[in-house]
Image (tube, rainbow, N blue to C red; front, side):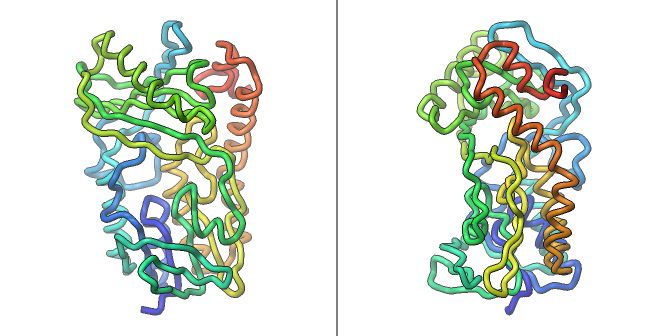
Length: 338
């Protein structure tokens, strides 16, 4: 196969890009280092209710509200905050299946060693792929992004465990504390289990296991979750805002989508919805060869929200971690939007 487009990564951004480019008549080859779509899961699995994606068969639970706990205060409840908790592996599989139906060729267990300055994708097995267009949807440490100098330099490190949920719960719980520097804790329900985790700035990564353990112990004491841990995951989330989403390597056009383009929200870390939509736009831009229009559309869609979140995050990092500062730095409070 001599592809017109090579897609690096088959998460929500990459699978959406591959499907869109294939639908528009391109020969698409998409590769991923994982052995299967979406596994291992490295995600809190929450998406907004209005996500532009087919969720049939992949939703574990609907959530209707958000409860925010600031230090030891009683929770502030935002009653109308709808969303869906996904089975992320099933979600990714459905997106990959859609790409295959559209005509894309997909390869798993395929490790990209680097993208060269000449625009060649070199694989770990010694083979190489040349294509007029590369779409980098390979996460916050994107090799495609590195090749064009668009690198996520600010990350939050996360740790998450899955535990049994002792009673039905229909809200996302957020925990803000000076003991969770540069991030927050969460409890996201998925029917009879819940994802329990936290994210912190990289200098505090050594605290992360203890932060999650304390949160787990607190919720066990309150009778909300079980002690047994059925899964553990983690990873980095880009929190530095949008990167330049395209570049040229000689004659090869490189486009970035999803986390590779820095589209995760710098405050919440949310990125699935932006990954799906930016992937589609990248697939369209790959066909039309209009990278400037792609960049402009990303800025129109996400620029203002990302810039606000970036300001709030920076304000919080520069402030004393008092309750007022924690509230101003979180989306559930009016102060965030002022």
